[in-house]
Image 1 (tube, one colour):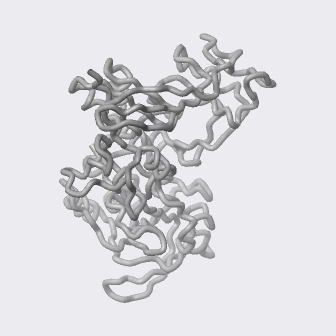
Image 2 (cartoon, rainbow, N blue to C red):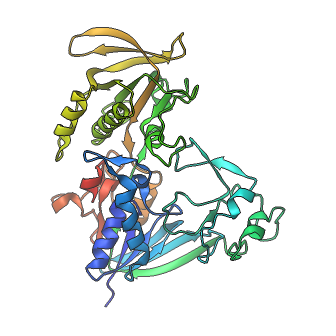
Image 3 (cartoon, one colour):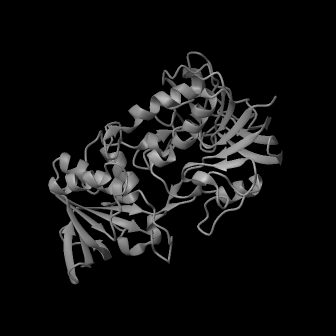
Length: 413
C-alpha cells in the first residue's frame, strides 16, 4: 500500500507537517525550491511574545527532518506535474543541480578562494556571499551550493576558474552534474506549505524606501537585530554606521490598502511591537509605533503590547503622508494623529516599514499544476466548509501555513 505524502514548501509549516506525518508512520517527500529548508523563521532573531531564540527552536526540527527515516528531502527543486486523483497521484519533480555532493563537510575552505561576490538573500541584501555558499549556518541540507548563474565556470566544458574545486579537501565539487534532474514519485496526497513573501516597499513611494538608506523594511531590521546578522546584532544606521537615537515603526505599509493589498497581513502588529521592545532593550529609548489599528489577539499578545508600552514604547494611531530626507541628515515624517486630528511633522533617524504579506512568487503557476483554485487575494482557496481551512478545491490536496493567507508561526504550526 502506498502511504507516501508530498509536502511542498520547507518553511516552518512544511517542516512541522513533514515531522508530524513521518512520526505518525507515513512516508514523506518534502520538496523545497530554495537550497535549504527553514523558510522565514530561520532568519528571525526572536519569536513574539516570549522572545525565544527563533533558530534555537527551529534548528532541531530541521535536523530531525534530515535524519528522519521516513522523510525524503529534495531541495533546489519544483513540482512540475501532478496527475491522478486522491490516493493515487503521480508527481514529477524537477531538481536543479547543487554542483556539490553530499560528501561536503562544510569546512568552508572553498569560500575564501571564490572571487565572485553576490548579494546575500538570507540577510535581505544587507551583506554579501560568494558564488559558492551555504544559506545560513544551520542550513539543512548541510552541503554548500554553487550559484551557477553567477559562477565564472560554465559547465559542462568551460572552467576558467577552478579555485573552489582545488581548495576542497574531500573533492566533492562536481561541475559535471546534470543541470536538471526529473524525479517521479507516487503519493496518496499532497500538502501545500509554500509560505509568503513581502511586498516591494518601493511601490508605496510616500514611505520613502529607496530615497534614503535609513528607511528599512521589517526583515532588514530583523537581520540588524540578529547576533549573527550583518552587524552582529548592533542597531546601526546604514547611512553613517552610527547608533540611532530615535526610530519610527510604520505598520500596514501596503496592507488594508485598495491600491495594493486589501487584506490585513495579521502578524505585522506583533512583530513590530517585538521590534519596538527589542529596540528599547538595545538602549534606544525614543521609539514610536505608528499604526492604523493594533491587533494583538493571540495568547500573551496583549500583555506583550502593554509591556512594550510600559517600557517606553510610544504608540500613535495614524498613517504617514510622506517620509522625506531632512536637512539634519535624518528623516522627516509628516502624518496625521487620527485620534486627535492633528497634522504633525517629526524627525527620526531611522524608519522601519512593516510591509504587506503577499502570496509567494509562482504560487499561481503551482496552483495550475496542482489543479486547485486560488482566491481573490492570490492565495490558495480553501474548500467551503473544510474544518481548519486545510482542504483545497481538489480532493487529496491540502494546504497549511501561509499558503491560504497570512498566519503567524503558532497558527502555521
